[in-house]
Image (cartoon, rainbow, N blue to C red; front, side, top):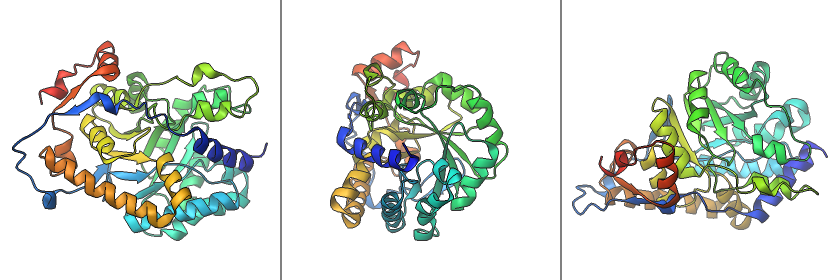
Length: 349
């Protein structure tokens, strides 16, 4: 099967399998503040991931490219949304364009459509330094996402089966290119062990890509005859991933992703320790079903809702929101307790 056909299969199955919404945010409760001493008009949504300044804590996370005309149109539309809403945007893996020059246009369209925006290039952990430079140059990118997708590759019929040397390759890339590196899981969560290894290799921005959103095991199992269904429920929830990495690797900048849809999800992710959140599948469905203007309206509404929530807890900035008290319960509480996280650090701050 061609890479282009596989890209379109992924989009089709992502939409049909949907999002599990088992991300753990139902386990996170804000402590109500009757005297927040705040106002909606004073709330500022700007944030930073590493040294990159963003006007919003929301960005459009990696989705597609390399699938011919259909993925070109999707990336063109998403880039226009990013421009209008002043959001950062990540493309899908650019290995297709590196191996087939004809696919470059499906990625280059995002910079053409959004010449002044913040754009993240994207490659897998198999990439070399030279390929990383090509991906960044292709988009004049502001950062490079390197995605980790071991489970997806194992379930993918034609996927990789050898994952040796990935950390060394990422370490070489981090020391060889001039833009920040974001290492991103693809829906199975991030453990403290992985985050510590990444930090030691010079990676300062980690996208936890938690379990609970688009499930690439289910997607790839749709393409298999002998299904590996034991991987369908595999992973670390988004909430547990953010809290675990935040607790054990405090020097890292954390991006929360994995099933995030609402302003409440976003506020909880930030309060757990994220500095920004990536949304992919939910935005894609709205864009394809309702169009560009509807997605822009949705994003504007989410921004307004987020300001309301921040006002309610007395947070005027993203940094303030990272310090408000939370109470954790359910599976998230049990996971973090078993993993050695003192959850009272959230409830008593």
